[in-house]
Each structure stands twice: as structure tokens, then as C-alpha cells.
Length: 487
Image 1: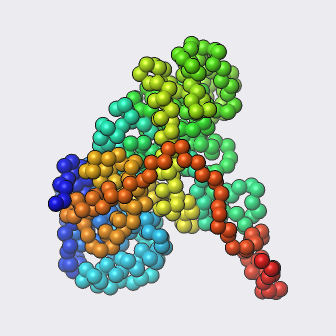
Image 2: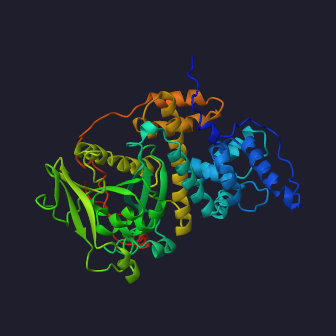
Image 3: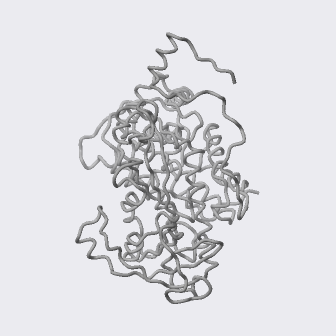
């Protein structure tokens, strides 16, 4: 006997889809402004019922998101690729192993035939132009809103002492070598022109309890103001009073801690290697545990105005503790409420952000973007986060039904199940309890303190590196042939 959904909060974020094989009809536009809203809602509902690829989009047409979606949908004609269908296809595209536009268009063409609709062209030009018309603001807002809704609905037992912990970390993203990408995201200076690839830096904020992606900032990988600290300052408005920021030693500096303290946000970082910790100073709270005052740096950073510098306090009080051969810095000053072991256990969970970035970059293929322009690459990043949050939404509901923590479930397992579920025409609403049962069956192993070398056992094929531009290499081969070398 199947377990019923006791707290179906995902059902409130999903519109029930019924198969519909009706042939397309001409759209009659009512020019009366009072009927515009009803027409838009009717159009969204009709497309959700008429097309299987918009199963992803059904998650985004919940009461909580419907008003936001309607406001962000651009004015458009009744096309082969309306914005709702394009967004759904784009999301499915980033989750599949074959993420080519041709694969996405082929799937859409086959689905139209299966639904009894007129066959369409399988050329990718129309779909690519439709992706370009998709508003970046629409995709980014939906990604942030799905993350926010998922974070707000986290169960109390998933939180850390009833508080929301937000993970912060950065990573690098590569993209095709085009003049437009090189202009916005220059390749590293150590690489010769025509040999390297544009490289971008990405900083993300992720909810520890649910794994939801809350926000991101992207910029060049090198250059003035392009570091992780510069990007994270643009994300601080997403933190609220009572939140806890959890990050590595790179973020442990006076300015960031002072800004978060002013907002009522607590932090937990590893001590930066540039700062010396002396437990003989300050107010002792126990063995290798003390309160210490940090003075405001005398030098004003380039990114800060003189007025902003004057606002910062001359000193801030932080707590430094040493656990497991590492020094942690926090603004959680009460050692009776938050012990050293509590801080150590919480900082150990920071590793979840590394796993989340691995899920995005490796499982979902975000490590190398595919678009030819920086605008489309940024849009692709937000589509990745939106699809990622939909998967996290399914995992959270499955964890809620099974009475486990969402972090105990496998992300890749959920992606695989969702792909198979949709390919067989199953709905995420009618058979939702069965889907959640399958998701909850696969748990990740509990391996505390696991240590693995960052090395690869399988050797790559012995091809030499390309050290000149590809066009030059082609001309050389045409004249002299391939330079075969013994293995």
C-alpha cells in the first residue's frame, strides 16, 4: 500500500497535467485590457495541457509563482516555440547527457507527432532564436523565487538550531572560444591567444537545509574587482537577520564580517592563513576558545568610498576556537549556547557546498557552457540553477514523505529518475507518491572524515596539447601531414 503524501507542498507548486491531443487552433486576441490577464492565464494553461515537455514548466505555474511568471512573460505571437515551451525545453536540455540543441529539437518534434500535431522542422535555428528571445530577467527571477520558496518551506528539523544556514563558495566556468566571450571573460594570461578558453568566476549562495540555489553572481576570472570577495558583496542583500553564513577561509576578513554583523547575520569561517591566532590574548572561554577584538584595517580598500569606510566600527568582537587542527572564526559568541563541538560539526557540513557545485558542474554539465555569447551563457547559468532547484524540490518532498533529511538523498539518482519519468509520459502530480517513494529509496553513504587523493588512476590518451591556433595547425597538417609520434 502506497504511503499518502502527508504534506504535499510540492503539489501546491505543481499544476496537474492531463494529456491533450487537440490540434492547434488559431488564437483570437481580445484587445480589451480587462481580459489580458485571463488570456495570459488561459494561454499558459493550454500549453501546459497540450505539451509533454512543459512538465518542468508546470512546477513553475504554482499559485506562488504564477503572478511572477505572468509578469515576466514577454509579449509574443503564437509560435512553434512560445516562451513556456522554450524554457521547458531549455531546462530539460541542461539535465540530459546529450545537451545539444539538435537533441532538444528532435525530442520536441517527436512529441508533437505523438500528440497528434502537425510535424515541424527539425532545424535548430528557430529554437535557438527562441532561446535568445527568452528574457534573462524571467529566468533569473524564477530561479531565485523557486530557491526562496524551497528554503521557506524547509521543515524545522532540517534547520540548524532553528536557523537558516547559507553556504557560500566560488568556482570557475569555461565557455567556447569566441570574440564576444573573450571580451567579457578573458582567458588566463598564461594561455596563448587562440589556444585557451574564456573563463568566468561564479559565486553561489546555497541553502544548507534543502540544497536550494538561492542566488549567484558571475564575473571575469581575473582582473580588478573580479575576485570572489567582490562578487559575494553583490549577494549580501539576500541575507536576512538571523541567518548564518558558512564559508571557507577566503571569506574570513574584517570587512565582510562587519557588514554581516551590522545586518544581524552570524558567520562561521575558517581562519584566514594571513592572520595569526594567539589564544593567550582576549577573553578565554575554555581550552583553545576565546573572544578577541579585531581592529579596523588602516588602509581603505579601493572598492570602498571614504564615507563607507567611516561607517565601519573601529573594532569588532569575534570568537576564535581551535578544533581538529583548524581555527574557526565566528560571531556566535555565547559558548554556552553554541559549543566548540557544535561549531566543528556545523563547519564540517560546509563540504555540502562542494558537493552541490559538483552536482551542477559534473552531473548537470555546467562546467563548460555551450553558448557563443556572454549574454546567452549567463542565461544558460540561470537555467541550470532553475532546473537544479526543480530537482531539489522533488528531493525535498521525497524526504518529507520518508521522514529523512534531504541531504541524505542522492541528487544524481533523482535526476535519472526524473528523466526516465518524463520520457515515459508520467506526470509529476498524478503519480507523485510513487515518484517520491523511488527517490527516497537511494540514500547517500555516511562517510565522515573520508579522505581521498585528488588524483586520477586512468591515464588519458597520449595526444599532445594544441599549442597554436587551430587554423594554423590545420594548414601545417595539410602541408606536412600528421606528426605521428610513438606512444
